[in-house]
Amino acid sequence: MLLEAADLAFAYPGAPRVLIVPGIMGSQLGLSRNAPLPNDIVWLDPLDIQHGKLAVLRMSAAAPIVPLGVVLFSYLRLKLHLRVAGFAVEFHDYDWRLSIVQSGRALAERLRTLRPARVAIVAHSMGTMLTLEALRQLNARYGEAAADRIGAIVFASPDIDIDVFSSSIERMGPLARRITVITATNDRALELSSKLAGGVRRVGAAEKAQLERLGLRVIDASQQGWGLINHDLFLSNPDVRQVVRRAIDSRTALGAWRMHVRGLVLGQSAVVTAAAPAMSK
Image 1 (cartoon, rainbow, N blue to C red):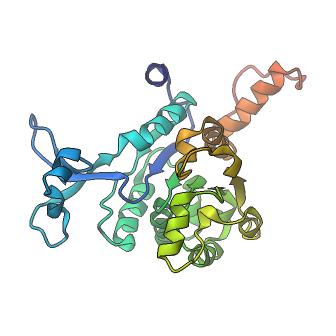
Image 2 (cartoon, one colour; image 1 turned 30 degrees about the vertical axis):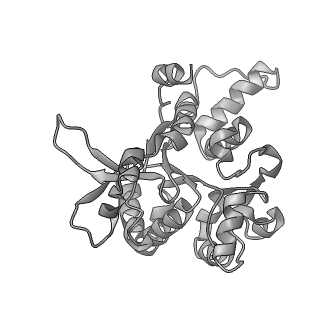
């Protein structure tokens, strides 16, 4: 049903392009092949893992490994929901074996060249680190002109050191006001990540008030998760997915138009306009 609705949906004129940045290991890696042969996906292919083929992913290996899309099992549902909501949505897959600086450079270039010019970003888990690095590079090179290209920024379950994150936010200037952070203090994956990092709290499991002091919009989804992990609530929980959509809507003329129509339906507006307002670029 969702897939059919997404096929029938179309992106509204002026709606921002939405880029979904998966967490680490959320991108498939493998060997690219010329058509008509299919690509040889190594990560995440259960058969390749079973037969010990993961060794070709070593950086010292001679195999020309490239990113081959995201792990659809994890991220496709979010893309389809945003598509149904009227957004043009793309995934940003990347080679998570590379340094954050290298991967951030590729994302920064993509953000610079994407059309339409306005881009919203939804980053999951350690995809937050990649996104912050890309925004840092854009800001360093283009200054305020870079900020004009970026709409809403949603960090879902950010797996990043709270101190590193705070320092990055302080250097982002006006872009910080466009950030929504989705947290869950009962995120088991981030609890483990914190232990591996020597007990340093991860942003996605931080207290809401601590992040709000940075000037960010924070959604505490702790009460929305009933699973064992709770690290993918923005993917699996419909209420949290709505939070993502509203965060993107709030930065667009499309969102304002939706609110206007809702007001008409509820009888809260006495003025009926003949057409939708001009969409922001």
